[in-house]
Image 1 (cartoon, chains in turn red, cyan, purple, orange):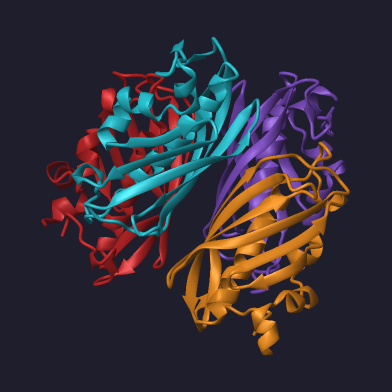
Image 2 (tube, rainbow over the protein chains, first blue to last red):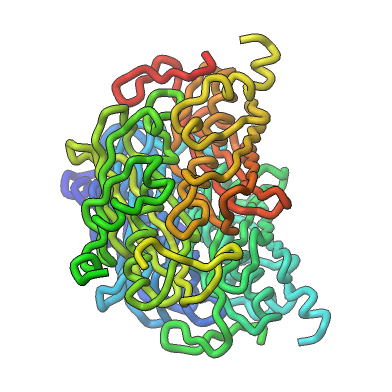
Length: 154
Length: 154
Length: 154
Length: 154
């Protein structure tokens, strides 16, 4: 990985999107160990039966941005991360066709755990959802669910 | 809706899956105003970059089951529901191919708000994730995000 | 209540402290429907058995500031408020003698619910805890727990 | 500590109550690494300005029981614990004079973290509040906030 990519991994993440990010259609705008920004346009796969965005999509975007930021910060220390708790508040219902933006920043980036919070806003700047994720930091070589903890960025 | 469908809406929900449930591949086993059970098999669209299930999937399943249960209960009173807060704890990492089951039951089903909690378990019965959702009850005719609040069940 | 007191209710709150605020020793610095700030010095009644501040104190301070802010905003509309969900993250352990400051601001102040978040910081400005509270707005005359919903401010 | 006390530490905890538990007036009925039960009677120090129990009291009781249970379990492994996240849902408002009971059990007791949940019920068995706490497990000798992590039980 070049210095530019380390400084901002958005391009790498967009090329090597994991299954969930592909399913959601999330595009990273900025991704480093201090800030992660991503955008997506609401499509039919994001909707629940009332025709508004499914709350689980907001939780999932909060989880993604927090995990990416914490993983990128951990990478510098040889640590990987795994989410422990996700708490998301739904503020404003949104419908198909809207372009949403999410931005995550760290509350703490300790050696044992990190906490990141993320806000999701509509094109008019209004808050749509806000959540936070507590993540556990794992030293290199530690296994998760019977397999090695790997990242797309290594 | 017939009496049988009211008693259990699982079949109706499986026929008229919303966008998010289709994307996840969730199948309802039981769905009424007192209990909701659903199952799904972990595929590539559920994974984050470490190869384990994305936490957002667990949050989303918790959100879905809580919303369906609360909506079915609200239906009997002419109310619709909308999620306010989702808090999900991740207990055990799981990998592709596993069959997961989620079960939601109400903590409270008030006239103003409901709280449902849901547990996600692996085939061996071990707890994978647990979460709760607080939902606001809306009287009939109330609008959400500039459109009428509708359900697939009406 | 005079116009000055409505503009900022900190003095009124400090004179008519409820039981919990007295027990904690919380002093309001600013209190209106858009921002609440309070301070307290850590004493023996705030400690758990390791000699650090009990997490429940942080949750309680978050709950207090959010409730006061939401109640003051609701007062202008003839509404009272009641807390539904409290989620608090503990960031940094603190010991006896430290002076802490908490500041709460609203994420949303809807007609049905409000969400306020509060940060607790040490004298050196470092974050100690952060939490959010979802509150239900009640129209005047609505009962809580078999009695009228009253505030010290009316 | 004798074998009987290890089996159940309620009596030890009631004798050596920390500051917060004394302030609240919490009495432990059972306390071991698998289950913690405590009771208290609502007094003026638990009330917010509407005359109902302050939500922070419920959060704090949830925090206490989860911490005690996790600490007792950790003790057997030479670990101490520290709370990371507290999420509490308020279900039913209660007034002065009521006797409340709280019961906590573990969702997971891993080597790195534990999750405990606690339910608070009124004398009539009705649910008043429910919450969960994620705690970090610390190996012996690890410092918290610049001092050693000690428990009243060692």
